[in-house]
Length: 161
Image (tube, rainbow, N blue to C red; front, side, top):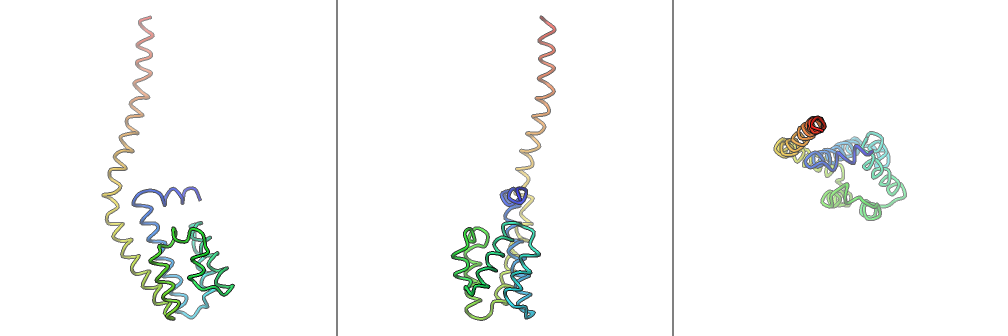
C-alpha cells in the first residue's frame, strides 16, 4: 500500500498509473455491463480484479451504495476522496451515462479517452524522468565520492599529529 502511494506521487509515473487505472475502470465495467452483467455484480468483479488498494476501496464503497439503491451522483457525493481518484469529468460522464441509459457505452468511451491519454503520457515519460534520474544519479555519485574522500582526509590529518 505504501509502495502504491509512492508510485502515484512520482511525477509522470503517477499520472500514467492514474490514467491507466481509469481506463481499466471503463473497460472492465463497460464491458461487463455491455455483456449483460448486472451493475452490482459488475462492480463486485471490478473490485475483485483491482489491485490498487485505494481504487479497490472506492469500488467497494460504490458497490455498497449501488446495492442500497443509490444513484451514481449520490454515490460519488457521499464517498470521501472519490474526486481525487476519479476526476470530476469522469464522474459527470458516468452520471450522464446512467441517466441516459447508455452507461456501458459511456464507460467504454471513457476507457478509450484515458487509454489515449495514457499512451501520450507514456510517450512523454522519458523527457519527464530524465532530470529526475540525473539528479538521483548525481546525488548517488556525490554521496559515494564524499564517503570515500572523508576517511582519506581523516587518515591524512592524523598522520601529521
